[in-house]
Image (cartoon, rainbow, N blue to C red; front, top):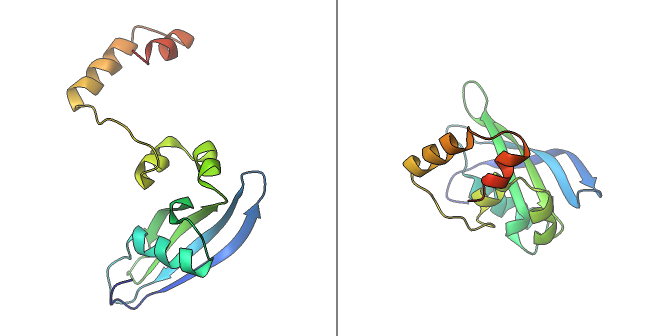
Length: 130
């Protein structure tokens, strides 16, 4: 972490065997400083839990307490990248850089959305890939 003095603690730690991960609440205490970046939090958690691959760490949902100085969020450490790709939502995989995707323009997205309005149910999912 940079020169900022912050404390990162985990609580409600749980090993979830079915989803092949460890999950916990992350408390970050950063008095008089801006909220700590997710990358710094992941780096600290990787050292604390001796994680071999930092890409298996996902932190999200951070909220800064009223008055600042304290943030709380949620953290997940998967046993492997394969388990992360299997169980994590696509948007979080994209956010962590585990899934490559082409960024379509705003106009293309809107046109696609309007084309899909003509279909319902399974037809919509079948035509979504065109």
